[in-house]
Every structure is written in structure tokens, then in C-alpha cells.
Length: 437
Image (cartoon, rainbow, N blue to C red; front, side, top):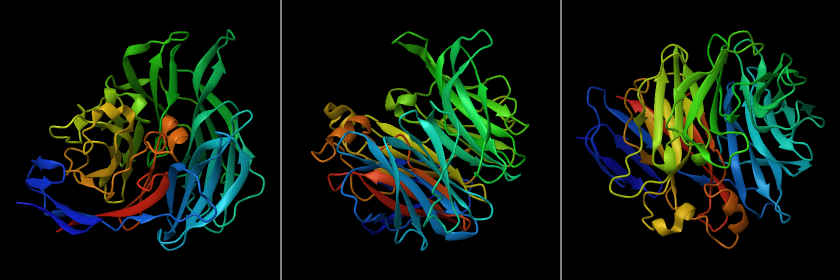
């Protein structure tokens, strides 16, 4: 029988078997070798000169140097806008360097590394929500003075680096049909020079509904996989009875895309963005369930033509669940890690969106057929409803619409999240390692 061994306030192991954990007793399928999930010591990210809430971080790890991490995040300003900072570490997240970007009214930061170790960071900036893309040749210590820019009027931009060296941006936006009718669209641009310039944009109009692109993935053969979720009819304030998650794919470098492929009818974007990940011929999809009631996982073995039945990977026991902002990463061995914000330990449901939360992670070592019991990563609750957080928490009750989770070359996973245990959103980081015996 497996146990969770408490090692100190921020470090413990989860083993396969029947596990009695801080989250109750959970039965786990047998038939695997002995596996441990080691959650390393969490650390606060000290950011000199910043005394304001820091939210919505994104994280990437240098494929040439696993000790080199880059991140981007938003910093709340007194005028209710946000500025953007870049962060870099050369010692695996023990210490961090800060870079302040001059843009004001900015946000939606995303990061990536190219194969040669060049770092890339993007964000939207006012007044026209133009996407700005910066490059760094020194691991994120300094960034290009003049960014490359792509289409305007975008939302939730992401970056993808392909096996052929292409760098893509994917975002939600608008486009016009041949009859000049305005529609929601998925906006894709491609760079063949590492982000110095971009071709496009290509606009993908999927339907006449309102929808946004989620977090995409790219397959080993270069196929581009983009999820999106619809939720309203144009002009209607009432949500669709069954919001749906879809995927479009491109096998020609983002020039053309497939018809929409249905993934799910039970996800709910109010709990965070849906995300895709790929390992070999498998495509993985994770999303928040309706009414913040759980984290759902699916997989496809034919690039989205058909999908497995959903697996619920959180186990809230006898408490009212509240789960948000799932993130997914896959390491080189095919192990899957999914992390999210979880409020199960705060039974005060009267707080609504402001229940205290912890960061939780669950791992699969069999391609998503089963998941090991979830393990708590953060040692203290994050309670957003504090005087120093109030304006930011109203917009981001879970510290943003996404958090950082990346797989390292050694097979471990690095997490970066926004946490208000100190009465103001600050960034914390921790490493999760999977060991098979």
C-alpha cells in the first residue's frame, strides 16, 4: 500500500496504491511499477522594485540549458492597468533577474525558447491590442529594443515553436467573410526567422458564434493543433446551453486549416483556457468542467477525429469542488503533468469566487489512461480577498487566466504560479519529479 510521506512543510511524495492524503482516501489502479511523485521545495520569486500584485505568469525552459528559465507576468498598476515584466533565471529558479518592458496597458504574456536557445516573449499592448514579440540571445537577461509586431485587435496570444524551425503566434481575433460580415476568428502568423518578422496573418473563421482560441500544440511532424471554445450567439448575453470545445488542424505550416473537429460539450471557459499537448501520435486535451466542478482530461489517437471519454482527474471528496486554470505539460518520456488551482480545503462556499486555494498537480505515466492521486504543491492557502489584492482579485480570483508549467530535459516539471498567501499576489515556483522504480 502506498503512502504520502510528509518530509517538511513543502515536500512530500505520492506513491501508487491506496493513498490517504491531505485530500482524503483515493483508490488508484494497480499494474504499474512503483512510482513516486516528488514535489520539491517551493520558493517565492523575489522581484526587486515590484510592490504590487503580480499575476498570470507563463514559463519556458531552455532546451540547451535546463537551468535557464524565462517567464513573463503582469504587474498591477495604480490606474487599474497592467505593465509587463520579463523574468529569467540561470540557476533553475533559485534567483531571478527582472526586465521591465516600457509598454503600458499591456498583458497576456507568453514565452518560448527556440531550438538554438534564443528566448522569445510576446504580449499585447494598448492602444490597439497589437501583439509585440521580443527576442533575447542571453537567456532573458536583455531583450530586443524594437519588437516584431503582428495583427492588431487580438486576445490571448500564444507562441509555438515547430520542428522545422517555424515560430507561430495563435490568438483570438476578428475577420471579415467574403460578404464583409465581421466574425470571430482564430488568427495565426508564422515566422521563418526566429521571431524577427512574421508572415500573415491567416484568419480561420470557424462559425457564426462567439469563440476564442485556447492553448495550442504542435505535433512532431509539424502539424499545428489549435483548440477553440464557443459560448454565445452574436448579440446574445445568454450562454449556449452546451458550450463546446473544438480543434482545427493545419499540416501545411498554418496556410490552410481543417474543418472544426469536436472535442467536448462539457468544458467551461469561465474556469480557464482549454489546453492541448502532444506526445508522438497522441493528442491530449484538458479543460475546466462546468461550474468549476472538476478538471477533465481526454486523449485522441488520430489527431482529433475521435476522442476518449473524459477522465475527471481531481478527487474533492465530500467538499464542494472549485477548480480553475488547468495547465498541462508532457516530458520526453511521455509522462503527463496537469496542475490547477483547487479550493477543496476551504469549505466556506459563501465566499463564492474568493475561496482560498492551493496548487495541485496530478501525473500520468501511461499516456493518460490513468492518473496518480493528485498532490498538493503549495504549502499554504492562497486567499485572494485581501485589501492589497482587491482590485486585481475581482478580475483574477485565481491569479490570472493561466499559470506556468513546463517540462525540463531531465523529465521533471517546473511550476510557476501567482499566490496571495502574503495578502498580495506574488509568484512562487516549485519542481515536480516523477521517479519509476
